[in-house]
Length: 193
Image 1 (tube, rainbow, N blue to C red):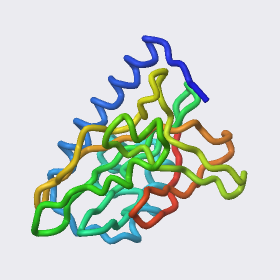
Image 2 (image 1 turned 60 degrees about the vertical axis):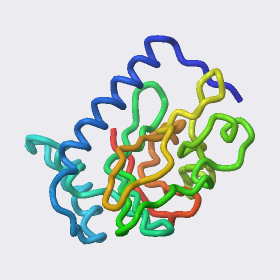
Image 3 (image 1 turned 135 degrees about the horizontal axis):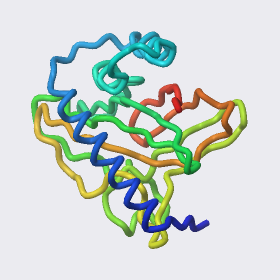
Image 4 (image 1 turned 180 degrees about the vertical axis):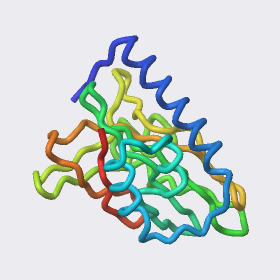
């Protein structure tokens, strides 16, 4: 299956990715120690309170989900937003929570031939809609490159990398999906927008 994006759509995707990456990087500089049980309350509070001055700040401070990987890797999902263009963008931070450098496992890119030949990426990520009984894979451009963060390999101790992944959007009524990434635990996340 090949999905084609217009030049305008690609520019929009890149602009959104850069803006969110910068916002997450700046907001993510604060201290950690968040309790893994807080995200659900925070996500519903930010969606229900229209008077809140900065929803994006709240999302960056309290992740929607935290997934533990091997060797001290931690993936914090900070947002999952539905776009009018028919896709969902999942943003987060991939962090080395250990005291030594860690090579991000190649398995996170998945094992599809088209994804593998495009180098290191988060192309193995999927969204699972258990209600609709569907699995959504990371989108690809017309050259087969995954629409996700690419070109990383090693994270130094304590280092964090802003990441994104884009998926086809589940039906409008679907707001909760399970996020999966090879070598990481899976977690439910809420789609906003």
